[in-house]
Length: 218
Image 1: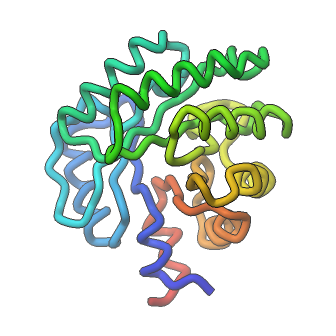
Image 2: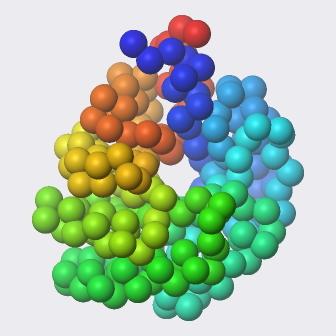
């Protein structure tokens, strides 16, 4: 059984609604610290951001549609890294993904990677709910070739849905522990979070972090 503290250290405590205010972000950062979360995930407009010691700052890139030119995503990532982002969660071009244009996806991921090199952590959002198994595998492979650190299921904003146990398991099997797997989108209770971890998730994107952790003991 995963302990509360162990699960907290897997959480990106997330607030990404378009109408989020600075005061709400401040409250969210305080919550992340109090919960023992690994990171806080916010929109890049809130950078630079002072997070408490021990809490990483993650920002999104090309969010939520992914329908941005590679050079625009790269510029956004470079700006975020220069203004204090520890981690970047980028959305791929979903039209490329659905068309099987995996080289084009790889090219845009590599552009972001080069714009925000290590030690900045790069997570690639593939929007797994709209994909079949072959597409999920191909996109995970493209992400690895392009130098990503994580593959991530979802933005949480697509009407097709968020993370699924099946997608997380397939992503984990594909990247084989060489990359992390972030499950995000629709994870609102302890049981679902634990299912995702059991399937191979190494990070969780949660807005309902407190409710998820409430079902666990230290």
